[in-house]
Length: 271
Image (cartoon, rainbow, N blue to C red):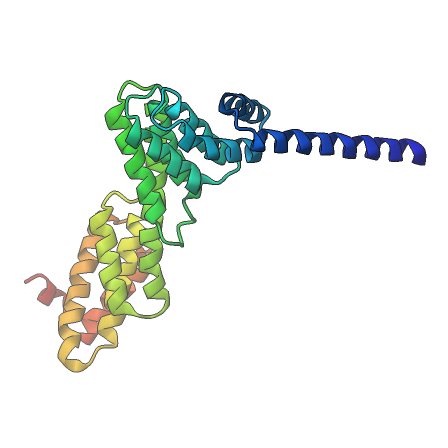
């Protein structure tokens, strides 16, 4: 049993050494057509580390030839295969820039967006990459409106926009959770303006109402009345849009407390 294991291990080592020896021969070769052929073989066998190294060398060798866009494409795809989406996107962009009419252009333009999509962080982090993905997919749709990938690109744009909406919502909630109600009012107001159809609209409006209430309640006398009156306006807007909101009971409590602090009666509010 042990002998069989040792034989198997030895065979594996010999095959690995042989493979490494062959690869080094390819790397040192000055026969670029041979090297290009081997790069494609490594790529087809999903040995993306070796194919990316070879295509990385060949990209300058074949620049300006009728194979240049092909080399760029497989260099980008080799990086993509290694999950290096930053470099993959870079080479896809280079291909589009230098060869906009290439047969690889359509797929490359789509994959630029998809690389950004795969690199897009969670909503709590900076969302520049998310916006870059949206822009890239939109450009793809504009350039290739008849592509079969357009429907998928639109679907991914919707998903990415939801991340931006959630990021905006979390920003507003962050200031509220930190009890910075002035900043919370600004952030939540901006979020509602930027994403008026947000699925978080009810919560955004409620926390805007609550932030205005707490800001007014804790204000100095010179600013209290103005801020509480703003909170009253927010209350009417909220209950008009969401009369059966799960937050209605708490919103009504704010309203009652605000009337008391402003010494208002029901008849005063009807004027």
